[in-house]
Length: 313
Image (tube, rainbow, N blue to C red):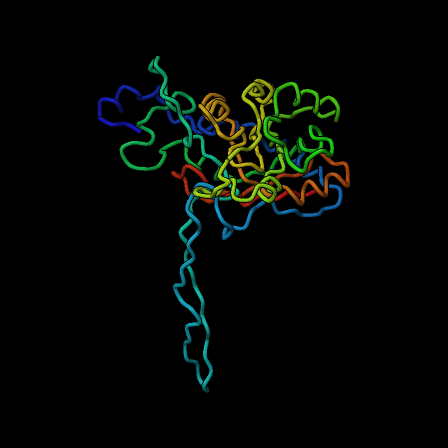
């Protein structure tokens, strides 16, 4: 946020020059060849949705409000017949459930006067009107079809000792390099790296831990550490996706993974993905790669969007 016009002007970033490809960040790694390869990966053709229901309780954001516009509205027809019409609207926090973070979701004001957001973009991108002029969800308006790579870190790190990554068990660079080597996986440009931390099991086994005001309130979650960022940069990874609320561990502290991914590298973050069915299938089949698809809302200036994601295995 900025408190004055002076603050705003002092953090205007380097001009973008209208380079639409550059504005897309790591989404640019998804080429037609990437898509073609991803579509060769399914073995059974099974489609697995990856989205939490939008009407389930949220974490840290307002719950969805469902409004009736028309409720069994009758419209007369000839001969004593009637059409019956229902219509509705919702109030939805765009980052409340399974969602993407736009590149403009997270910026950092550095003391060297550099840009605030990805690519040197400054606060003028999100000021004075609300919304992002160049780094909002419009960068993903083309839709996402790419290879998903499953990092089942509960199976790999807990080895049957827990259904979720326990406190202090986080995903560091050594664990990622070991996982890739042990499973003979080579990262490809445009990959979506998908991390299973067992967060839904954590919620079930620690009732009230994420409910503000609860006697058991203790919002802790394991996640991906920022020392992994060089791996994703070298691999030209498109996105880091997880079943937890922030991809990185919670509490987030300075949000170093967010800053490194979104601001420095243009790597997208996907949070609160429902990975339970995917993990169950992949453990049975031995698969670690599959077709990953997502169609975010076409809401260009938004800072986030429901993911509308699925895997084809």
